[in-house]
Image (tube, rainbow over all chains, first blue to last red; front, side, top):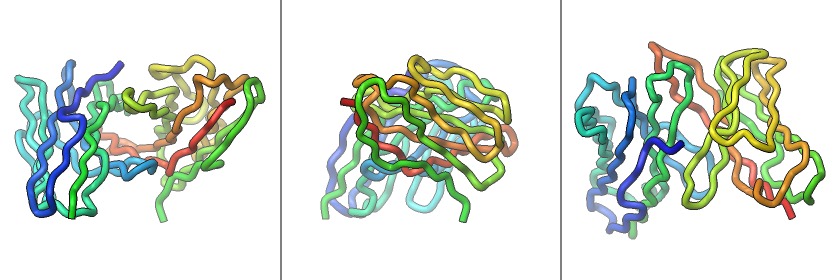
Length: 112
Length: 114
């Protein structure tokens, strides 16, 4: 089952602009994670936000979480061509089994 | 270097010919998992293992088998591959820190079944 639904599916921006991606989920969670995937490669963990947190920053990344709306957003500021990738949110479904449920991802293209 | 390795990276095979995709991690992680990634469907979990000799089905286990005889290895077995198993496969591992599983992914195995 797909827990996370991401929006938009694809995003194209110019270098230097900000990129915002949204993720919605269905069940209660302990935490929500964002991963990045360069074309055809493995996913790399970017940032995690716990269910009792509302906002978190890491470098040019800003993540927000609204548990009442069951949604999260990832903001990449001052984007670079190297940010071109697919971005996935993943939730843990409060299972404590380690299982993550991934959204379908947002494909970001940053034009130089 | 901490990593998850998969082999082979690319495989073209024919329907019905048994194959194994290996996965190994060097981080002493308890949890390992297999996913398949298909266009428009995202990543779907096939099987996971919470420790040695403990495995369980994910969301799309049909047509696959796994084993976890050693902590570091988690092979994915396709006993009789079919064309609908053509996909990009990822192995991942994690170990909980304060209840959080940050997963480390392998580089992927692109499988084509003709």
